[in-house]
Amino acid sequence: MIEYLLFATFIGLLFHGIHRKVIARVQGRPGPPIWQEILHTLKFSFKETWIPKTASQTLFVGIVFVAIAIWSGALFILLSGGSILLLFAVYLLHKIVEHGMGLSTGSPYTKFGAIRSVISAASELPLLVTVVAIYFFTRSLSIADITAYQEVNGPLLIIAFPAAVAMYLVILSKMHYGPFSIIEAKEIVSGNMTEHFGVWRAGLEVAYALKTYVLLYAFVLIFIGSLPLWLALLAMLIVLVSLSFVCAVTPMLSPYDTVTIQSLVTGALIIYIVILGVVMG
Amino acid sequence: MFNLPNPQIGGPELFVLEFGDIVAYFSPYTAVLFAFALLFTVLVIVSRPERQVDIAFGGDAYYTKEVEPDLLRFQRFMAIACGLATLGAMVTGDVFNFTLFASMIGITNIGIVAAYRNRHVLNAAFQYGIVAMLATVPLFGGAAIVLSSTGTLSMWELFTAAVAVPLIAKAFLVLGVMGEGMAPFYIAKAEITRAQGAPFILMVHVSSLLLFLRVMEIVISM
Amino acid sequence: MKKRTALIVGLAAGVIAAAAGLLAALGYLPVIAAELVAVVAFPAFVIFIALWWNAKSGEEDIPFIGY
Image 1 (tube, rainbow over the protein chains, first blue to last red):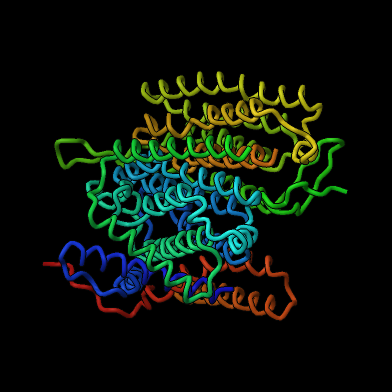
Image 2 (image 1 turned 120 degrees about the horizontal axis):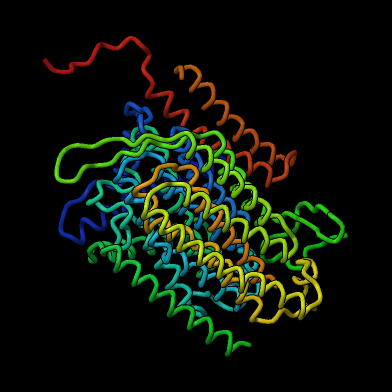
């Protein structure tokens, strides 16, 4: 079991490195080597570590454990073909992690990161719409059933294209350096991660690597179908590179615009669901 | 004896506890939610609030706020009550009990937010209180419509294909839970920039999100 | 926390997770139980191993902190 987690962490960190490299190349910079994020995580883990004096100590430390645990759980949900409603739950629990991380320190920067995390709750709703739209087609929310459906009827990417766009947007809003990553914007230092340094930050990097791996893998599994591992990794890489292009050419939006765009997309998808409901009974 | 009628949504049932005709249960989905609520309730019990740092704008000065013990005790009490209500809402197998737990979460959320003596925070708590009270109308109304149209409130009956729940009841339930779960927005509006108490304020968030996740499962299953 | 404690906790978490995976592969343990063990043990493994290797052994020079 732990070997899956280590593999996913490693690949996730590598994906983060590729993400940075592609962004840099699109913007005409040389960029860091693609294993930079792996070194980064190791670097943080070797730094001197303590708990800030103003922090709520238990929460400050506990939230890092929770962050790693929920995304480890999400990986196993995917591997064992569990329910995508559960995956959606993990995604929402990640919001609590972001929020708790920001609140637990007492620093104003992390608090602002936490507030931005709360007001951008609209970034979760597209995923819910995805779940409901998929339920319309497959009449089941278990990943095993969804992949079985796709073997018979072809990939959901074509059948339920708007739902795929919604999930794409969800992944985009969680990518580093993306247009929606207002919670870690530089005007508030590093947002809600500001005060988590050293080992805590290394733990968070591990959690985020798992998160990237899980979200990309879920996208491939739900919308393209179950593939052999190397092909799945290739598909994930293609999705990632397309995300990197979006991140490279768009500036970070203001919090207000972020929420507006996410709400508009959610609204459009709700209309799609209603149409689906009318057409398919 | 008990088989969850639609295991394709939240997984098959793992554990069933019977109180007469009220049957609480765990599916993998609700078990995960329950574990998460339990974890954060324990965190609330064991952790102390942070000491918030405030910057005096226009200079380099900053200061930390002191935590009043009375405030701490009250907020902790409310947060633990909120955690218990969340645990209840996660395991219950009865729509009316679910709405009761949801409204209890609303009440305790008001308590957590209103504990802090600051004009902006109290304003936000007041506004949230009105929203939560208004939301009890669709919340209990939804449960009432479910009962009157199907003759039962047990999820074991409602989740079967034979029982058709009217769309308006589902919409009312979701609307009610959205009202009860609005608390994080009011907190974002006023509270967390001014008040301390991270583990307790986080409980507001945990309860609202978990409530939302649970009502999604119920509505999709019905 | 002592450097030694961190190592023991980290290694124990790693060994427990690996053992659970092995037992599940051999069929002695349900897969879901092994996954649960891995979910709980993996964060402890990551954090405590990192805490172990960055902890001071107590024999370093005093760093230069300015005149």
